[in-house]
Structure formats: structure tokens, C-alpha cells
Image (cartoon, rainbow, N blue to C red; front, side, top):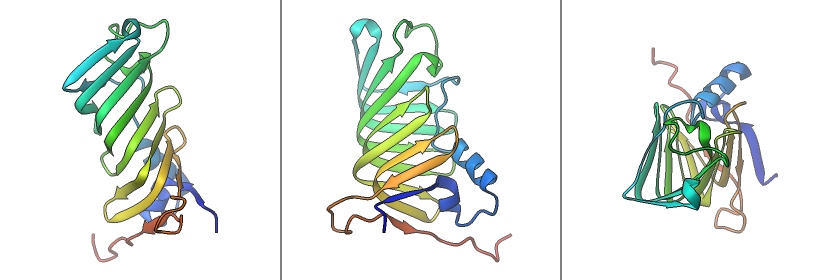
Length: 182
């Protein structure tokens, strides 16, 4: 059996959505920050480096964009070269965000946790990694060690934890929808 599980994130979590297009649309709407929307970034301490092109926030760091929330102990924000970090409140001049220490990412329907992460604003790719990466949607849970979500097409990849107690396999708990609920 392959150590790599590659599936559409929402299709996997919703447990058999009949239309792939619907699943990909839901994945694009979840766990995805966008470069053209305002970002609210907070932390206990800010250190500005490289003439403002690199900002390091530490202590209770949070990023909010619409319904999306990212929290961690430390965050490093890299601004695109040639841009002025003070020109805009949107993420359009941010190249990438790196986070570490108790990383928590939440959208309206999904939550992902890990030890460290990177979000590339240009490609809209979120990577979470660590000893255990957990992705949940409702009662559905998936566990591995590296999660990559490609926000533009909704594709997600979860890699197993090699050489650990689970034998290096991705674990999933899928709860079928309540057929009696209306």
C-alpha cells in the first residue's frame, strides 16, 4: 500500500460527494487564504528585518481573513521584493508566510493542526507538517505527517508518518452523514 494518499480534501472528508466539481469547489473555499483580501495579523512582539521585507511575529500570533484563522507561536512574513509592506492591508504584497509552534488553521468547516507550516500567497499552497498533522471536518478526522492543500484546484495530499507507531500509514475516520437528519 502506498505511503502517500492523494485525494481531493473535501471529497475525502464529506464521504462520497457525488460530484467531483462540488468537492473541488468546497476545498477551494476551505483552509485557503487569498492574496487579494485584507489580512489582520497580530502578535505579542514584532521584529522588522531586511528593511521591512521580513516581519517576525512571536507570542500568540494570529492571522484572520474572513472566516479563516491561523494561529501559532511564531510567524515569519516575507514580502515580495520591490514591494512596500506598508502600502496595502491586503496580502497582495506578501510572498509567503511561515509558522511554527502549535500551528492551528481553521475555516468555516475544517480545522488543521501541525507543528509548522508554510503558506505561499502566489500559488495558494498551504503545507502543514509535524509529528502529527490532523485535519478534521465535523466528525471526520484524517491523520498523517505532511498535508499539502492546493487552494486553486482544491487538491490535497496527506503523507504518512514514516517510522512511527502507526507503521507509517495515513489514518482516517469517516463518519457517514445521518440519513435521518433533514
